[in-house]
Structure formats: structure tokens, C-alpha cells
Image (cartoon, rainbow, N blue to C red; front, side):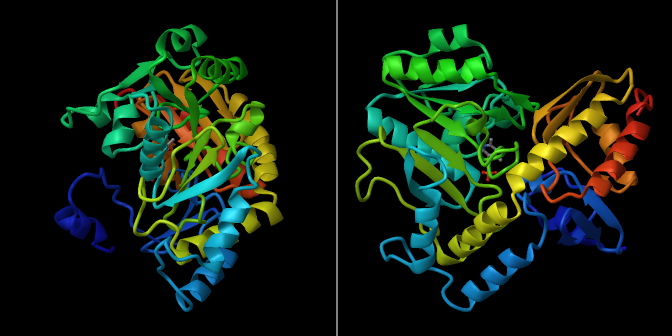
Length: 390
Ligand SMILES: *Cc1c(COP(=O)(O)O)cnc(C)c1O
């Protein structure tokens, strides 16, 4: 047995709850531990590996670009970056410009800055249960105390309105609101899809009061929910869309898609040393063409419907609700999920929690039906168990 766990526990900063399972290799929806045991990955690194692990086209694009040009500040144009900008500007009608960063939280930081700069207003309305990241702006928009406590004071001007509640939005959005910031499907908060009425009302109220609508698609983007972006289920165009996680096939990258109402973006107001580097851009170009060629949104829609039906058929007194969109699925239990996740791992399935009582399934979109059946069989076995003493 390897001692990576001991080494990382000893020398790491200590901010992660580490599993005693070292992963050294991946392919498609499979991961392998240091002893050669295979696992089905239903976490995708929190929604990063939508294309599956070590996708050959992404790997080839990264290798080729690493041998060509890894770094270039955005002051100088570049073939891969220009191609990616053109591509991303065509993804969502109405969002025709793009800013590149390196992570989800940076995308949210940029979106908050753009909204304040554009409107000259201070306030951001986010939602209860929201998760937007861990740097100060994004953390101020994040709801759960668990992430916020010990770091106050956070940024002024942020408030949280009850999710899927139109009345709460009506009350929260004022003439001082720069933007409303929402996940289209709340991820960390427990896998809650927005209702169509809610998203449409958010758009309408923002328009009436001169606020911008920002959707955070960092987890729900790039095919995960059955469409390229989850907002496309709703017939609504936001003013700003944040993405990251799966954008570059696993290579770190974030992006902000920007609509016409966003103003005052002139040289110097924002930037990033690594943002738009050719290595990440080449990876993202490869990832986006794989998403198209393999119709990953379509695969997520079909496989998500299949998996959802099988999960809803599981009879267990422990299950409160199964919900989600595409391959972004939550199984809410009446009890704590930790022992169930452990039991799944013993059956060689890696799944996530979302809070204390929700099992979250975010498998790579390339997961096979056979693998889904294996996951369902393990869940059927585990979910009926009484783990109240664990
Ligand atoms: C993961 C996530 C973030 C933060 O992304 P990082 O890359 O970890 O900074 C922000 N918003 C949502 C909805 C996320 O799921």
C-alpha cells in the first residue's frame, strides 16, 4: 500500500478532508487506485471530467501545445486563443464576448467586478444555499456558514434570497442592485434545479430594475444537464455566464461569457497573468469539439433520464427525494449520507455528497449504460441498509 495519504496529510495545508484512497490513473468513467483497483467515478472531480478522464483528443492537444507555446499574456494575440474566443462567442446567442481566467471562483470574481463596473451599483443578490467559490467576492455570494465562518468581514453589498421563490426576488432586487447571481441548478447546496418561472421572473425583474442577470454554470455547464448550458432549458438569456470546471477537459481554466448590456470593459479594469494561456486554450478547443462530435449534451440527457428512472424505482425508507437535470443528480436521504458514500466506495463507486443528506452523482458524460447499471445495483444494495449506528 502506498503512503501518499500519510505524506499529503503531513505536508498538505490541512484544508481538505482526505480520503484514504490514492488515485493514480483514469480513463473514461474509470479511476484506478495505487494498488490497481478500478472504480467507477460518479464525481468527475466535482463536475470537471465531463469528457471522461484522459480523453485522447484533449491529451493530444495539450501535448502538441506544450511543445509549441505554453504561456502568452493576453496583450499578445494567439492562434489558439483567437479560435477559442470565436468558438465561445458562438455558444450562447447574445453572449458574444469572453474573459478567460483559471478557475471557477475567478470567473465569479470577474462577473461581480463587471456587474459593479457596468451598473455603477454596489449590491449583489445571490440565493440561499448558493455556492459560488471561496475567494472573497465569490465567498460573499456563497451562503453556507461552513464556508464563510472565520473569514469575516466579507464584502459589503451581498444578500441572499430564498431560491425558487419569486416573491423573495421581488423584495431583494432594488435600484441599488448591480446583479442577481444564480446557479441554474444548485450544486453544492443539494442539487436543486431552478423552476422555469423563477428563472424567467429573475430575468424580468432584473430588466425592470436595471440589474444584470448572472448565471453561474461552473458545475452545470458543458453538457452536464443535457444541454450545452443549463440555462438553455429555460429560454432565458443572462447578461453574464460564468463557467470553468469542465471547460478545458480537466485542464484548469475559467471563462466569463458577456452580453451587450455589460459596459465599461476597457483596458486595465481586469486581467489575469495565466488567463487565456495557449495551453488551456488548446485544451478547451479540443474539449469543445469533443463535446460536439460525441454529442455529450445529448448523451447526458438520455443517460440522465435512464439513471433517474432507475433511481426513482429504488424502494427504500431512507430516500426522501431523487431530483436533478441530465447527469446532475441528487438523492436526498432522511439520514446522513457519509456512511452510504463509504459503503459505495467499498463497492468501487466514487460518489459525492452535497451537504449532510444528499448523495450527488456527477459521472463523466461518457459513462456507459453498463457502468450506470453497476452503479444502480450498488446503490440499490446500499440505500436500503440501516446505517443509523455508523
Ligand atoms: C465549483 C464551483 C465554483 C468554484 O469553482 P473553483 O474552480 O473551485 O473555484 C463556483 N460555482 C459553482 C456553481 C461551482 O460548482
